[in-house]
Image (cartoon, rainbow over all chains, first blue to last red; front, side):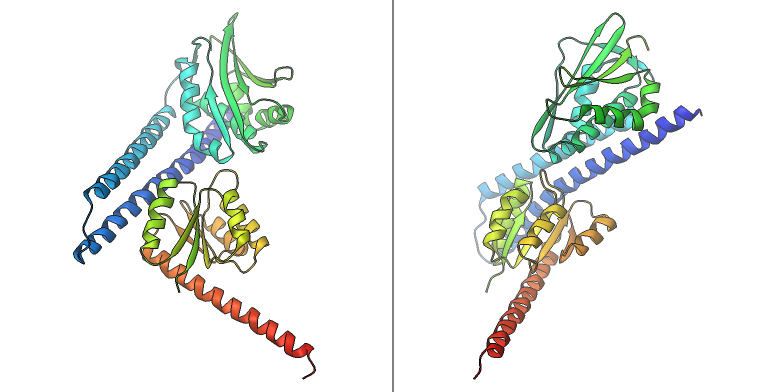
Length: 218
Length: 142
């Protein structure tokens, strides 16, 4: 294994760790709500044994609450499953909007913790041959460094455009962030990912954007 | 006398059902869905225990714990968490948390900890009152 592959694997492991820790926390929250609903059912059963009438409407509401949490857990598990499989997906032609949407969903909870929302704005589909996991990892690195310096509410928009065989991915966090510092941090931490994607990171100071450029034909 | 508890969690469903179960156990519960919202309530005081989620938007549990303790160092704060790492648990205790409980929590265990926190608060209030009486007695020439 080359040094760059080693570095990519190490970064990948750290990325998987961050995402699975966040997902396990989300699942714990779901379990806590299901657990309290089960507890409340027990409370109501005990009260019914003592003669207090059991309201069918109440039971229906609780059933709906549990069903909603099961649906929520199912969505989380589906996301985890897709993420797990993306780690060994080979290079293939990928529509960037799909990778952005998935990454935004994957990091949504961590973004919320920093009062940030991540949205995807694509004018037209952009297809690039690459390993989706490596791009997801690089996007996470950029977003993580944006989150780290964010104070108060902020929206980050992910987009991409292609022209003349070049693709430019943009992360638009709005005004007021130290984008040069974020760029330096991404270069320092994510050199192996940038190399694996033959990508370069830069700052568009005029439009307050972080740009990742990569060749359309990987 | 029923215990007065402030329950802070960003999951509204969790707040609703947990507060209902606590009320059924004669606990007087106030809820807040963020640490920021809870700050004003803590300033007004009167809680026997604060049950605080460790991970929340804006201000996490440890930051909130520091702010609450700055308002009142005697506050009894129980941290409720989805993933209690040993490191965070130790940090919470060092910052003055009374206890750290992992989600999903057993309500019987939580109620027991609330009652202990209530008892601890009574001891602290009694000590404070005793110190005040001693100070008054010491300052008067009877």
